[in-house]
Length: 154
Image (cartoon, rainbow, N blue to C red):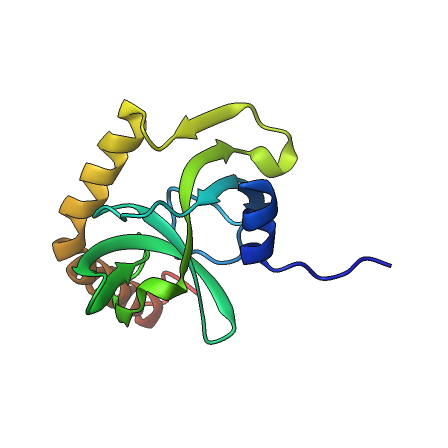
């Protein structure tokens, strides 16, 4: 019989955690059930745009740190999310993303390290996209409603 081990305990014991996610909040970077994430222990100092794993209110969340401070709490947001979570306490952050293994859930071999140029380009793209994301989603929703009313889409 196996015993439940928290992510915090696992990171303390082994230093690195590899797992797949549930949800779409970090699309297109991390695809549910397809990609594996490599999480390392949290550094002493977090940097803006780090992708952090935090544990709050009984759930684990992996999102991007976009602002805030250790003293006042962080502002964290998923790459595929409109809203940011505000006031996340420093004590809730337990790890940071070190790499994404594309199709890692199925034995994929393409590993994207967070310190690679590929990852830095992706991060710049996502950060620049944030202001336009809400407009894009609303426009897409509106077009879908029009197409459904015209009977061109279910």
